[in-house]
Amino acid sequence: QVQLVESGGGLVQAGDSLRLSCAASGSIFSPNTMGWFRQAPGKQRELVAVITSDSSARYADSLKGRFAISRDNAMNTVYLQMNSLKLEDTAVYYCTIRLGRYGDYWGQGTQVTVSS
Image (cartoon, rainbow, N blue to C red; front, side, top):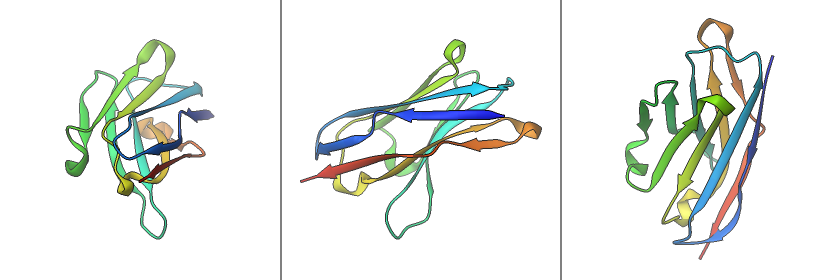
């Protein structure tokens, strides 16, 4: 089994920055893909960014340039740096790890609220 623990969410003002972290533990197999999705109230869960073991990253088109994903393979941790936050970035942010045939796992989510 795999456990994912997210941290770093909170209440910020528009224009601020925030950094999310997600640490994976348990049966972690490589290569793998780690990443972030988000779900705003009344909306479907959507891709924010994912990153492979060799640090190849993919972003939602609308977030390129403001968000940056990175990872520490030794710590099995993925980070999401969010800059110039907007009201529409308010959502629950979920960490995920994809282990191929060993399955996909999700964290509990961390709330990010951007106020005006």
